[in-house]
Length: 283
Length: 248
Image 1 (cartoon, chains in turn yellow, red):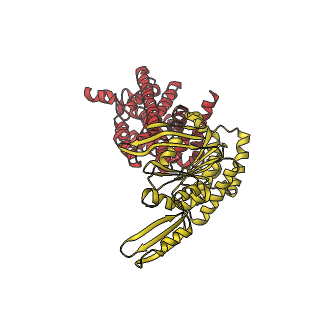
Image 2 (tube, rainbow over the protein chains, first blue to last red):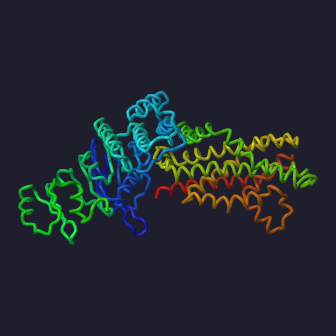
Image 3 (cartoon, helix red, strand yellow):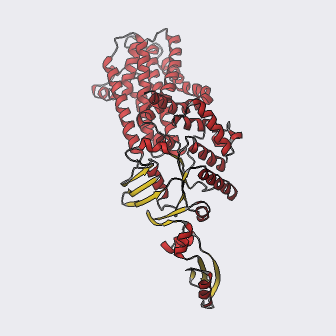
């Protein structure tokens, strides 16, 4: 479904994406995780034809995004990180514009728009001007719009950023439902819990480079399933990872008295990121 | 081919929907400037003056029509695109849609052409009533070409702009001088030779010359029409090139 070979984007001397090799299979809910500025959005922009790669190649559904743009564009839908709606149009008009641009026949258009507005719980707001909608509603409208031409692949670029916890959970349900309904989902996020809750497989990007790629459970296993976090006076935080609680417990018993705070817990993708890069995802 | 025209219309459609909500406000605000020019120059300064053998009122009305078409087409094609691109980011959706760059540019230019043409026609009606002059097919064709030319210029400016301020700067540096120097309010023949050469570089000068000749029943300056058409092509080529550069 998605394939990249040494995909690179350079701005002046800065390598935003550095020789990215990636493969996402049909039906996957794939998470692309990394801190702000890691290269997630640049990758999505190259895959969705908005940004020209400096080097390497990428294919969507076997269509090259540089040389077969037209065919590639028909295969995907995109929900961008920022709100990319004409805010002066009504909800229905926003949907209709997208349907027209994707050559959906008139009779089919009405049916699909109604269906999708219902799907994202916006049916009652079809006459509202987009600018009048809340942040969560705008995001749901963008998702409905992206699904309108029935793409087999959906790019979601930080779809829940800036939304409150309740709205975020609602969007997670929607994303899971879309994936269960057959859409391949490529999701970028810097929220660890989001990647863990949703994604079957995760790629971690740091400073433009893909530094890990596997199922969340496997990534955790490689680092250690149990994390021990200690805070000592004058030394700051320290993280250690262990295969199981038994070995973690043995380590804890060796700790000196200066340790002020001690937490033993299951490791997560944040720990994977810390172990691989030496810094936190949100730093 | 049918898909191409369908795509042009689809791009235009969104702008038409907005116009549907705001058409009355658009007509009133767009007519303010030309009516003020008519009052100040036509009736104020120009009363009892003859230029190129015609009453100044008859002389100045085609010039005001040219600059109205220029400003309206430029602003409504360019400013909307600038806002869509830099503020709403909705232009990205057009870039990701399976349509050609040609249909995108033509579709985006249509709203500028429509608005420019409608306002200029309304002003022409007012002008025809006060001067008893008539406008033939050549006048309408030139008007359409003027709207097309400046819609393309507006789109090119919007694609070049890195901020909203850039559009305002472009208007101040390019459009405003054209408004006053493009043979709209005075006869170009009265100018010193060097300045006349400069004025003939300005596209709106050629629009004014063609519209005026047609309006006053003078011999039609075909060369000016060709030059105006040339500018339309150059601005269109610039739009296409800038669109290609939009995906960096």
